[in-house]
Amino acid sequence: MSKKFSSFIKAVNSQKKIILLIIVVVMITIILNTAISMWLSRFHNLKVPTIGTIYVIGVEVHGGNITTQNGKTYIDWSAIFLGESTNRSFYVNSTSNVEVVLKLEMASLTFLDSDGNNVTGANNNYLNLTWDYNNTPLSQYDEVYVTLTLSVSSDIDFIDFLVTNGVTGFSFDLHIYPSRE
Image (cartoon, rainbow, N blue to C red):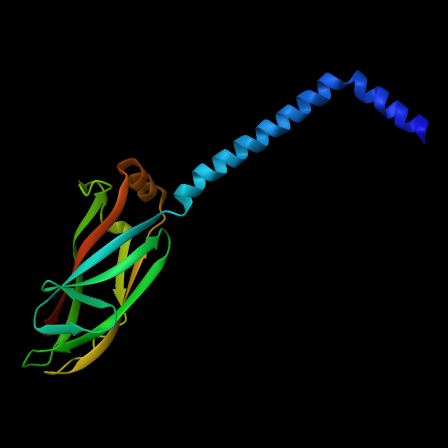
C-alpha cells in the first residue's frame, strides 16, 4: 500500500503546476458564478411597490382592502413581483337612481424613481387590471363585493425599463363608474 501511496505522491509532485492551475481555475469559476448569480438575482426578484387611488362617480366603495385617508380612497397593492398577480377586494354600492352596470378603468399610470421623480417611457401594456364583476345590473343601493387582480409583466423590455430608470414604485388611478348599458 505504501508503494502505491509513494508513487501517487511522486506523480503529484511532478505535476504541481498543472494541479495548482486547475485549482485556481476552479476557484475563479466558482467565485465568478457566485457573483454573477447574486447580481442577476437582484433583477429576477424585482418587486415594485404600488398604490392605486380610487375615483368613483355614482357609486360608493368601502371595506376590504380599501383605505381612506385625508379624503382620498386608495388601494395599497404592496410590493408586486414581476410576472405575478395580486388581488384586492372591496364593496361597491350603487348610488344611481336607475339600474346601472359598473365600469372599471385604469388611468394616470406613473412610474417613480428612488427620488420620487416621474419616469416616462413605459406604457400600460406591462400591467393588466381585471375584476370579477360579471356586469350584473345594480339598482339604487345594491351592493356587490368585487375582487380586482393586478398582474405585472415579466417581459424583458419592462425589466430593462425598470432597471435602466431605477424605478422603485408606481401608482395609477382606478375609475369606477356606472354605465347605462
